[in-house]
Image (cartoon, rainbow over all chains, first blue to last red; front, side, top):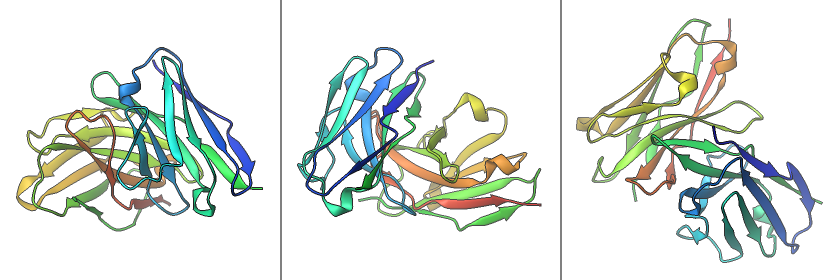
Length: 109
Length: 119
């Protein structure tokens, strides 16, 4: 059974700072099946990155995804006030099942 | 761009069943899967399963096998998720989301349906 672990659980940063979020899989997975979502309070998740590194439509280029094997990351180059939210990674596994990581919350310092 | 409109919030007693609908706006109800994901208050996202609106084929997460049924009505472009045997632990927001066939991500989400299980 594949498990996704995200770290840190919470991070406190200031606007303008760089954020690097980690998503680790318990076994090797394909970057093609790795996506990142942003969720703000009271809202549904929003797709940010798919196929490990491709930005979804309308997503600013300060968001970037990378990684392979078991280690993936989401980087926000310069935090804007609207970026303070919870971020989830998601992986497709066999038999058309999906799993999500537990999330990383970015708080304003 | 397809949008997904979900049914409204609901309150159920333990042992009851939840029925949530998810209606697609736009021209088509095919070419994508409809997935169901839930979120317990203050927690992360939990995958429940999916239905193929074209064929009706379903795939459920093991945790919900035997308790969940996902169906669709193509004439009104609506997918349904029924969850039976509700307990207090089923209190959550239930989302539907679409995945274009074999894209492996969910590009459009409904706003969510809040379920409260209370005696």
